[in-house]
Image 1 (cartoon, rainbow, N blue to C red):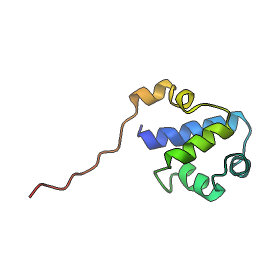
Image 2 (cartoon, rainbow, N blue to C red; image 1 turned 120 degrees about the horizontal axis):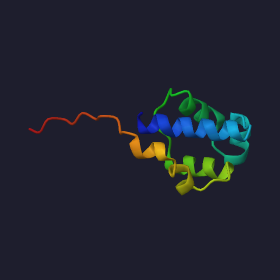
Image 3 (cartoon, rainbow, N blue to C red; image 1 turned 90 degrees about the vertical axis):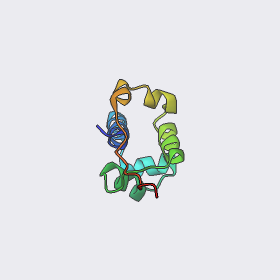
Length: 86
């Protein structure tokens, strides 16, 4: 699984555990619900690290605990094509 997909999945799982909507998350984290929705529905593949930190604070979890999930050990970065050297 790609790294960003796993981050989105983990956020969704934690929000579900805490019975939290995107609007409640916006309220607690300060991250716009539109930004959350775009990331969680995978319409955008990136999220700013600062926003993830705010999300973790709203979920009452540290960033290190968030990434302590063993699934991150097996995640992969998307292949990026490098421009050929001249």
